[in-house]
Amino acid sequence: MASILNQTQESSEVLGHVRCQNYFLFPGESSLSDPLRAVLYFLGLAYCFIGLSAITSRFFKSMENVVKHSRKVVSLDPVTKAQVITYNKVWNFTIADISLLAFGTSFPQISLATIDAFRNLGERYAGGLGPGTLVGSAAFDLFPIHAVCVLMPKAGELKKISDLGVWLVELVWSFWAYIWLYIILEVWSPNVVTLVEALLTVLQYGLLLIHAYAQDKRWPYLSLPMSRGDRPEEWVPEEIDTSIDVHDVYTDAAQRALESGNRNIVDIFSIHSASNDTGITYHTVADNSPESSTKRGKATKKATVIDTWKQQFLDAITLETSESKKVDSIYLRIAKSFWQLLLAPWKIIFAFVPPCNIAHGWVAFICSLLFISGVAFVVTRLTDLISCVTGINPYVIAFTALAAGTSWPDLVASKIAAERQLTADSAIANITCSNSVNIYVGIGVPWLINTVYNYFAYREPLYIENAKGLSFSLLIFFATSVGCIVVLVLRRLIIGAELGGPRLWAWLTSAYFMVLWIVFVVLSSLKVSGII
Image 1 (cartoon, helix red, strand yellow):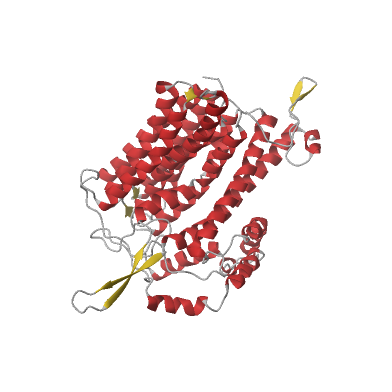
Image 2 (spheres, rainbow, N blue to C red):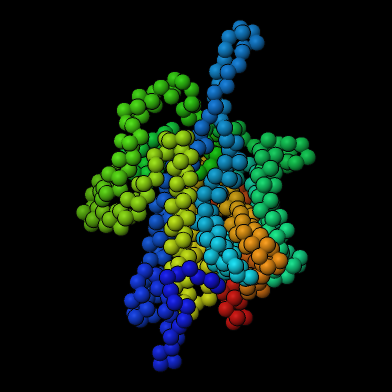
């Protein structure tokens, strides 16, 4: 695997031990013992994952502003001939779920795979970090995240999928993505990826969007004849004070809802919410009408964009948040302040992301993705060093540490959705959508980059190193994922919902999902390491 580290490519042998000469920042790092370097690099990797969580919060806030953008439509009343002004949403909510939400939560993995592809330009073999991370991330999304979500409802509370039609479409495309990947590696052109295969992989993401939109609109012949609830008028809650730390906003809002007993709050992560037991409906929040805009404008006009941006830096250096001030225990307050101190470097860096009220959030949205790419670039360097120092196969690191760390935004999104919503739609749909995006975009785009280069430079396809190991991992993932989906279906038939239920059954289901993940990780790691 090619590397872009500041390094010398040789290894020195000292007393029969091959010492890694690569370094991260300073050449003197190579003089440290390998165990110490491994610990330091793992700590650095963990700190990068904390950074990914921090920037993801800003990403979600910018995404909210993008999705709730509306356009003014002027029409004439056929009776009175008077002008009627309405505000129509620019974004379709299903498309927003698959494109903005799923793409955004998967962007750490996509960035890592794309960076790995550019690092390997000129190499006839594809890098191992990208595909390994994305397959490992799919397993992490499907098993540990389901394991967490099933425990989120209160004891005895049931949360089920309401729009089964959309979920089934997403599920089919998610399963097909991994079947398609196996066909490429083992059936169509074993051990190589051609330009046509890479192009078809990327194009299938467009087909997913079209099919999901057709299901959302219930187009004849292209959609399943299944009922669904009413459409929401808003995808996100009302705009909140930007001077408040985003972590505190979500925590305080959830706390106030729990204290008041009001569970009917709009989930920022997806469109599905229910307000009664008779069927799925959607919550209505303030519309973007002139009256509501005027009310909100009175507060926002007091602060300019510069003032808001300045406040972001002030919040970044504030160690005691509104949440920590509510804690009575001095020890807990100290612990929270220490955590804020640990986050402070990341918060200061990410404060440079412009405020979300510029250009309907698009500037902040793009800048957040750029920062995520930067953190992913550091992650690839640290992963190279960990593999060099410890001798661990890069695929093993990709299946485990990288997959878990880069999937953290998916875990956060699904967990909060499972907590805040009365249905399981967004919590589970986010998992299936992210897995589809991982293959069609996360693997498709890097492979397309490498195959195009190899085609024009060498007139050769892209060779896959350890394709047998990756194919084996796909088979294990497919087998275990069937076991996961079967349990979700059985829970729906027996208990009445995919999430929640009696506490004992919820814990047993969660433990079962975690066992499936351990089976996948262990068998995949043993295979790529040549042990089995």
